[in-house]
Image 1 (cartoon, rainbow, N blue to C red):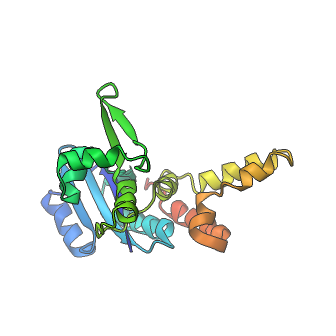
Image 2 (image 1 turned 90 degrees about the vertical axis):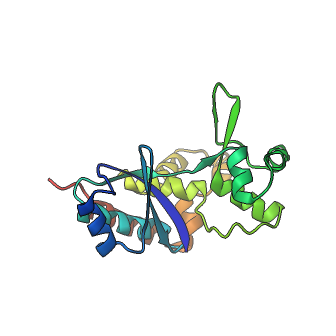
Length: 210
């Protein structure tokens, strides 16, 4: 099972009526609110992460009036966050971040003076480069993007777009394109067409209520 954390808007999870629905209908989900950010963490099979997440999104949005899942939370961290989560000093985390094989920063803030990394990539690096088990199973950034595309009613967008692009390429260009496979094919093996069909059914069923 992997953790997929979603950004939620449109409702106050601490409202007694909403809290009652959450406790009764979704006791296995994890909710959190920090300042203006509300998140919902779901646990799904890695192999069926897209379909599993969309099924939960459909249930939650149908059960809680006004609630809207607006995307996937990337969980960006700085060196201080990494140090706290990994149990090392800030200087130790800073030295890690300067390693040649450390993940590239996801974002810069304060005019480029502070680097932010995607926690999912840091966890992978800690496990492979430092043999530290962070006891978290997280989706890759590519899988997060695929899930978000579907939440935004754009099912399997990257696969469709890439196939359209490939059809226009010359034979000389195609080997380069074919070396980079769409996320659906990588994550779902030979079930890409089945995945796309099931995702479209879920997205259609989860259309906004009128």
